[in-house]
Image (cartoon, rainbow, N blue to C red; front, side, top):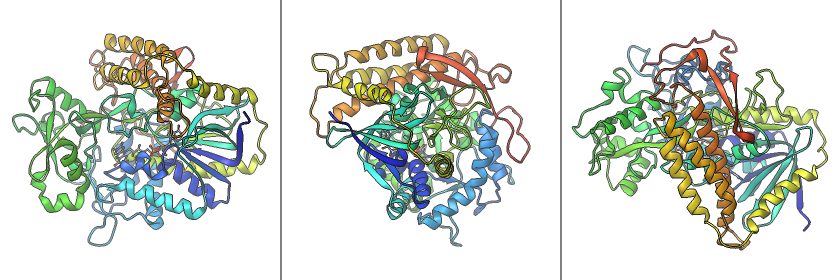
Length: 586
Ligand SMILES: Cc1cc2nc3c(=O)[nH]c(=O)nc-3n(C[C@H](O)[C@H](O)[C@H](O)COP(=O)(O)OP(=O)(O)OC[C@H]3O[C@@H](n4cnc5c(N)ncnc54)[C@H](O)[C@@H]3O)c2cc1C
């Protein structure tokens, strides 16, 4: 069968905020750009972001980017790279204004300026008052941003491949990326997209865990593609559990609820965060609040017949504020928890939310394939958004900093790709062996016969991850988890599709996603087992302290032999003094 081929200057995999903001720069520069997305672009997970995007605009209270930078470094438990953090916090301000000018309908203050709300981990330096740094369009900020960026891309004539599934990167012997093999979901036909550069912007991998706030599509495909191409993933042990998922279901109740004045209570109605974070209380950073909830429940203070969750009280804000600032939350609570927050508190428990780690990049979005700090970056390959690790979030991400990360680094990757294409004007010759490998991986799923189903293995895998790599982690539990996931990885060869049709075969894409999930899950489990300290979201009761002597370093994981290596933290910012590590209290 002859493989259909198409050529572009740049191939972008992913049409979330990161992919679309990169595509917009490229299309505006008149490059020929293809965006591949396994769902219609405006269904990317960015659309689900509720709370907002951080920028020190100082519209509500005094603020500046340097404080934003400090909060982010502290929030990262000092594992974030301070040059990238400085860049992001400075760029936040023009980035939000650019969004506004592109048409994002932000909520407004009475003076007409962009509305900003308080979010977790924002400084309290200002006369005891919390900063209000999170720019919001009600509780549908991601929706507003994604639709605006999509429309701007349509105007700029970006070429979209909607509902195409990226299978594998194509590389040559010298390491250059030559494009990717993708699958047309509607027809089941493969397509080879050749490009001079490629950007991975495939988003997160929350589906690794059973209870998650993430969409079904967040299966870590780009990260797994990087692993299969021989590249490492960085800091994968740092996975954020959002404190307030709807109990037993996982759907998100934004931190914006606490930003607007909502608070957590236990079975006695006590506002328990006063005990765990006396200053910031309910607006301490996410890792702190999530651990406090789990501890409350473990100590027998949980609510409900199983005493397995806590409550988020909002009704004191009044119906008017809820209708204006949190309409989506009211709707989700009614649908998924059967509770109207105007009358009753919402049952909540931590839910898997965000991966701080990802494909290692430098501050310019270029993929860094080695543990050498000054090592070469990979020619022609870029990564941005949740699948990448720049690393601005270190061991714990602050709310509102991910939309910012995807927009700032998506845009920057776009600009750097424009420069790259100026110097690399021709397509390099195709590497047939690499194409062959990708095609045969796809064809493996044509095998018929008896076996286990995709959903059987997926359910077992996601439960294993939840049980062995959750909010609290101890040595034996994790070692056991690694062995179990390795066994599940071997079991993949026994999985068979139950549907072999070509048209919209979701069974096939789910199988490809399962392979990706397991590869990424193992990177999380192995990296977590080896980090013997507690830092940010990685919490080990057997090593309860942060250990800056031995562990102030990034983890790198390679798929081959499940190998690990470590790399230094870039503690030197671009223009200001470094923030030295301090104890992190809220
Ligand atoms: C419920 C929820 C609420 C959130 N709220 C906030 C918030 O208020 N503020 C904040 O800062 N952050 C928030 N976050 C985090 C933030 O929204 C995400 O980290 C961010 O939107 C990710 O953007 P992205 O562009 O990297 O990826 P995504 O928006 O996830 O897009 C990924 C894209 O990759 C494509 N893709 C993936 N795999 C393949 C493949 N194999 N082939 C082809 N295409 C593929 C998808 O189709 C999609 O287009 C929230 C997250 C969730 C889940």
